[in-house]
Image (cartoon, rainbow, N blue to C red; front, top):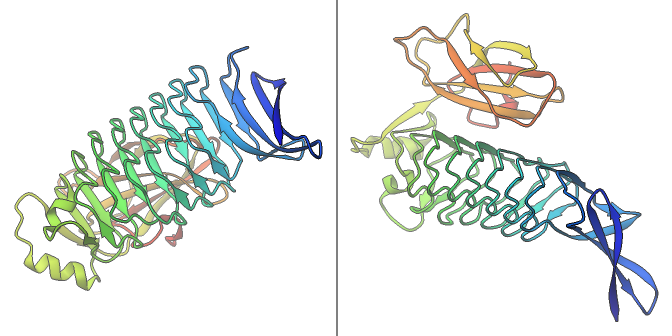
Length: 339
């Protein structure tokens, strides 16, 4: 038999202690927002006074703006419709994001997903209409249904983990310019990019299988250009048979760095001194001091224009950043590109 005792309060939060009456010991702690005062910024720890945090609930909170999260799992509905939430930092050690965790966070602009993240459930960022970009870490094993559905401000997605044939993950992302799929992606679904405006899709691996149709083009949404590794036999075979006038397939080879600079700003104008004769794309990446990818941008190369690129890269990191400019694309994770 157990009962809850509520009342420990700090910084506008309450901790619910779940007491086992048989032993009079604290088994776990639940964190939730209180109405006693406004909460604008919070760090969610893994433990409180050595007791594990078992659940977190800020559902429908209208004042919370920034969250640092340390607990291994972001629980179901943890920040459901927190309409003022603007920034989320999931720290290293977080491994899972459960269903509806950030559903309807309409002010959310920036989210950092750690390298330790492996499990992302469904409907995580649905209708997060202010979210501008996202980097999916390498360890993620799948992206489930409706993850970014209705993220109408989303400009780019860099997927370094896996993504397998679920549905509507990127649908109705009507500001999306480009999306990059990792070499781990082997399957796609025709509804994944439904009503998605991404004109550029970059694949780092072999041609994925479209699980619900034999028409490969339908899995590319509205893409006008699809880039694929030049040494891929499966892509080369598709390219030889390709007859679409609406979507062009272009091979690319391993890129290289021609310019590096250090800055404290996440925006700037870049004028590389040298460049290859015929690059397909320009990739500009920003790294933190410890080598983590903070932001990335991808631009079309126009040989008829002076190679000046004005870029505003949206990221959550502050302090000194190292920018690197790459021509073409590397067919593996960007931080592994040798300068």
